Image 1: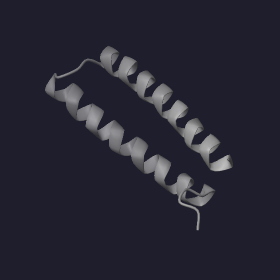
Image 2: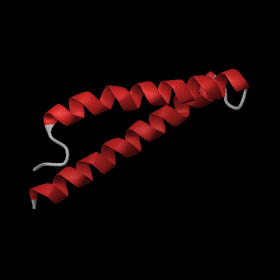
Image 3: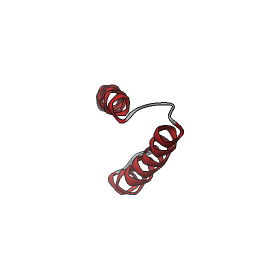
Length: 62
């Protein structure tokens, strides 16, 4: 059984995105971060997540 098949990724990805949106909205509304800071952090998370996912896929192919 695969841990991350296409169907699982299709279901889980939006849930993660909505959870992050909710957390970010809360942080902005409380004044802990600004929208500009959120853009920078979100870009960094997406970049690191992409590299990590590619590493996992490469290891699975070996």
